Length: 576
Image 1: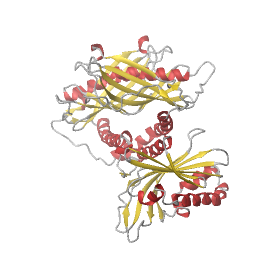
Image 2: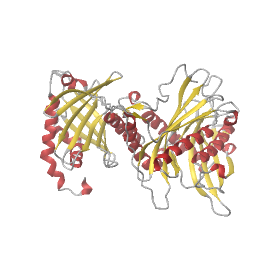
Image 3: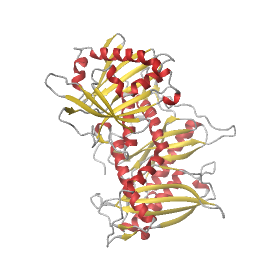
Image 4: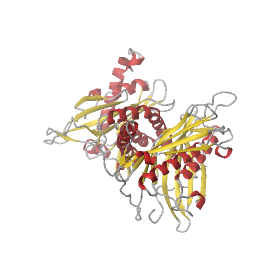
């Protein structure tokens, strides 16, 4: 369980003192505290994950409805990773608040912590994001009001919510493509004599949706459906290992359709594959009334572990898949495990824990792109930058946190933001204004938003080698009016482009441009860089105040944009 003291992720005081002295609390924030009773727990004395999912969904729904002013339903839930279990007698604290509202949907952030009343310890259990949709009113479709972030943390979540939404919208399609390409490379399933037949783990159960299971609009609570799904998944996992399993993760899932009072909900689960210390269970929920055909409500993939007396994962028995569909599910589970590890490795860990260069391949492109843009957005949202120097309206700022030095350069240009975005997006043209870009080769145009480049820079001192970088450039247009254009850069590794003797391989952790439209002709450009050993030699004299080369570079950038602004005006919109 948790170590002594208070976890760094436990909730902070919801009241903030703004710069103007105003006491502020997020108007969409909803808190729930529940003491875990025996009726909420399994036979091990731990809170049922299904019960926790119900409480999380209820809290998040109340937050969404507080913002929308009308009834809301759960549309999807992002990956959930349960870090700790919760025991009888402990208190569950749940905080939910709306991070951002779109046209009729909104993202709600959910933080779950546990509190031990006898030792005064608190620790984080999970952090999740759910999407809720406001239901139509008698007047027609709902148009949600915008969320106005007031604190730095709210600004960060507001900005990142747009990137998470983009990933949700393309998630299903990309996962399908990755599964088809990955499973084709796996070959035949390996047979084991002592393997447990998958048929033994199959579970089917039916639930009648009654008024206590639904909201005042007679729609079944999403959390209730998730709890029923978790129940059958736990039974399936138990049949494989003949022990009590612990739920660790639930993959991102979407509700395909609504369920109402009077529905019969048919829940099916089966273990798809068993790895050394974990197993994947597939769950499906379908509904019907009377003699109507089954309606698909939801499908989910849950990962379980079995813990020994020291709370360490036990080795699990092998699984023998069913013919045809069972073998397909078995192989897809292997592919999903790799995708899950990539996603957790790149997205879930803190920015400082992600290695400088992560191997790039199509299976992790979506997550690397997300991490790339998110890191830039986090720097863009910070408000504690220190002005180091300024010359002719080009400003250099620095920020040092946790022994990491970041810097930003800010200036204004009299060029429309969209044209500025397109001119700066092609790194091959950067050598026209940045003397640090000696060569730039386009390696791979992965899609419209992600491009891989090799950039070579000159040596800093006489007799030393130049450096080269393999960079992933991720472009984003504004999600809404008031959002910036973004060009995010970070290092990746490619087997096709290993380091060479002629150059020292440098690395960029986070860099890029934030481009804000201040009027139809005036644009604010901000360049960010989280300084790494490979980058510091190029900017150390500027930060120390011994040089103003940053001014020369960005003055040249301004002239470059001015000289080329008409080159894009003649292009059709599709070319932009």
